[in-house]
Image 1: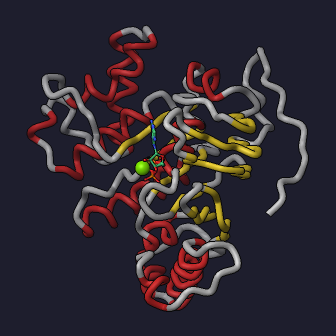
Image 2: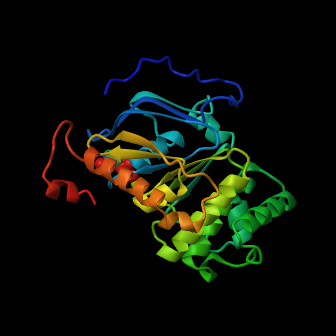
Image 3: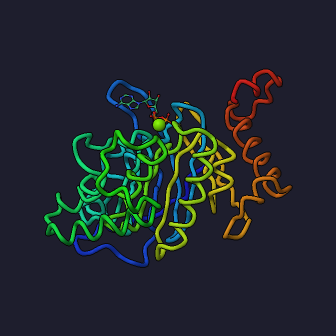
Length: 287
Ligand SMILES: Nc1ncnc2c1ncn2[C@@H]1O[C@H](COP(=O)(O)OP(=O)(O)O)[C@@H](O)[C@H]1O
Ligand SMILES: [Mg+2]
């Protein structure tokens, strides 16, 4: 696939541009010092208010894409821009928040203090921090647990704390890297519903979400970027047409099954070398 020639978005020295694509990846490649080509020619634009999932086998570069968008690493080719500015600047502005699979909470600090941490690092006052933390905790359904310690909470509740900590600075872009991967299926589905509610309630917040789980991607997303490995690339970007709110019944509908089948087919096709038609056993390995 050839890359359309485009001028790189200007990296503005002033405030982020509110009309720009939230994320624009243009011809992005990343080759690590040891020679691993983690990404090649990644092209994607995400509009404000989208919820885009990235699915693909382990090692296809999903976390690397997120690290570039978060400004934690630089591409070796192409440009990454976030809200019309550099990823580093967008992150410093507090416009971007990150949730990982591991909630990484401070074990000695209360739930409220954990959630308030980004505001404390930013220098906000104590009363202001506590009020904002309590609002975020209410949003994730944890009001009443402000004074608990992380060890008193279940895995699902710890993940809610981690999400509240990401939301407390009111980010315009929320990056979630396999956030529900360690949770049991029931808790995972509950948190998917919560995430959609929070996303819809927030004004134009954009969510990028990494998952191995095709069902999770279909339930949540406006669009799904199907990634392929060696080198990591976006093999297909599929739109999920189902309107929101998505009820639990969506999970058992024919539309859901059709979307899951479509994503599955794109994953299988993308695992093959270009132009090859592999035997079924080859395709089955992708699962
Ligand atoms: N710092 C690094 N140095 C060298 N190789 C790396 C580094 N980080 C990731 N990789 C490699 O880049 C590829 C993509 O990794 P990653 O983005 O973590 O994949 P995913 O999140 O899809 O599982 C893998 O082959 C991984 O081993
Ligand atoms: Mg990863």
